[in-house]
Every structure is written in C-alpha cells, then in structure tokens.
Image 1 (cartoon, protein in one colour):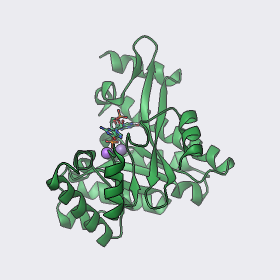
Image 2 (cartoon, protein in one colour):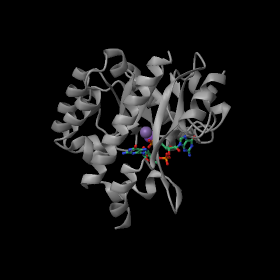
Image 3 (cartoon, rainbow, N blue to C red):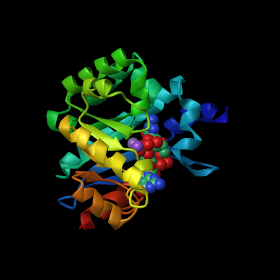
Image 4 (tube, rainbow, N blue to C red):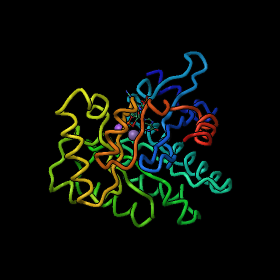
Amino acid sequence: DRVLEQTPGALKEGQFELYLQPKINLGRQLVEGFEALIRWNHPTEGLLPPGAFLPHLEYTEFGADVGRFVLADAVAMLDQWALDGLPYSLSINLSPSHFLSDRFMADLESALAGKDPQLKSRLILEILETTTLDNTEKVIANLAGCKALGVQISLDDFGTGYSSLDYFRRLNVDEIKVDRSFVSEMLESPDDELIVGAIIGLSHNFGRRIVAEGIETQAVQDRLMVMGCEIGQGFYYTRPIPRKEALEWAATFS
Ligand code: G
Ligand code: G
Ligand code: MN
Ligand code: NA
C-alpha cells in the first residue's frame, strides 16, 4: 500500500497540513473558532483530501501517528492564538481506532502537558456518532478522562448513527454537530427540517451546544437561527482554507 509506505516520510517532512473552516456564532455573527481538516501536500500528486489517505491508515500504527501530529499541531496553534490574544476554539477530528486505542488518553495528556486550563477548554475533540455505538464502556471512560483534562467533546455527524435516546443521555458531550446531510437541503425537504428541529430540541433539553454543518446559503443560516441553533459552519461562509488565510478571513468577517 503506497499510502502506508509514504506516510512516515510525509510526517517527517511536514507534508500534512491542517486547513481551517470557521465555526460561526449565528446570533452574534462572530467567529467562535475553527475546525481543523487535514490535507496532504503530496510531492507528486498535489493536495490530497483526507478521504484519499485516512482510510488506508485506519487501524494501523500510522493512523495513530497522524492523530498525534494533529493533536500536537492543534495545541501549537492554540498556544500561538493565546499569545496573539485570539480567543478562538479549535476542533479536531479523531480517528475511531486512535480514540478507542489504549494509547489515546496518554497521547492526549502528553499533547496537553503543562498547558493552562483556558487553552485546554478551547480544544474540542470531534468523535463520530458511529464510533460511539460500539465499545460503549471505553467511550464513556474516555469521555470522563477528557472531561477531567478539561477539553471539550463534540459528537460529529450526528443523526447518521442511530444512537438510542438512552445512549444519548449517557454520553456526556459538550456539543452535537447535526450532520450536513440533514442541513444542506433543509429548506427543500420538510422531513430534513423536522429532523434538524428535533435534534436541536433534544440537544437543548440535555444542555448540549448545537452546531449545524453544511450551511450553503444565507436562507438556511437564517432558518437555523430562528430554530435556535447556536453555531453554524459551511461553504456559505467559506470552505476549509489554509491557516493564514483563515485568520485573515476571520479578521474581516461580519
Ligand atoms: O475536509 P474534508 O471534507 O475533505 O473531510 C473529509 C472527512 O475527513 C471528514 O469526515 C472529516 O471529519 C475527516 N477528517 C478531516 N481531517 C481529519 C483528521 O485530522 N483526522 C481524522 N481522523 N479525520 C479527519
Ligand atoms: O465529517 P466532518 O463533519 O468532519 O466533515 C467535514 C467535511 O465537510 C470537510 O471535508 C468539509 O470540506 C465538508 N464541508 C464543510 N462545509 C460544507 C458544506 O457547506 N457543504 C458540503 N457539501 N460539505 C462541507
Ligand atoms: Mn468534523
Ligand atoms: Na461532521
């Protein structure tokens, strides 16, 4: 597998890069923070999206190596933003096999060693709803460990994994991200809008923050605001872009 063979060299040479997509506080029309989305600046194949390489790495030691790179790079960004007086949060995506591995909590602790509580509270770990459906006890133990460390947890792609309501109650997460498949065409599909409304209501009743991803038009943004959704993300604002551009974009937003 060429991806597997090339990954260690790519890590060493700094070919992986975190692009950023802003998360917008809808009511205040402010940039709350960003989601980091990995890209591979491949020397011969150009810019590769995560789908072109992450599936090859899942369940291999290199997947965990990339996960540790993402953690370290994210913490370094939050450090820099604190120095620059930028109060942004940063969300990262965790691979299921890394999150469920015995190494994960140690990797997280070492990435955050010596960091102050405010920095830790600005780091948001996105785990897939589908990841949480197996290994329930491990997931609940890790969530408790993350809470104790002071980082936030977000349940990504929510609505695609069919969590039971009992399970939803047991998962002590800070944030729910409604999957973009329910959001993007919400105004053309009454069923989608009903699902989004139900997820917003459920999340609020449990005290969870709600993020809608996949906002592609102002009309969808405005509808979500009326429905009480706090945070939005999507191509309507911008696609994921390199870090420097993202900070410039944020500085001129609103
Ligand atoms: O950015 P893009 O739309 O191409 O992302 C595609 C998928 O890759 C998304 O589901 C996203 O969650 C996932 N992804 C992006 N960056 C990372 C990462 O750093 N780690 C993991 N595990 N998944 C990521
Ligand atoms: O699974 P996850 O939510 O982490 O996926 C993030 C991916 O969603 C990124 O690859 C990003 O490019 C993509 N994305 C972000 N905003 C939009 C959007 O408004 N529409 C669509 N179709 N994809 C989006
Ligand atoms: Mn995500
Ligand atoms: Na998602």
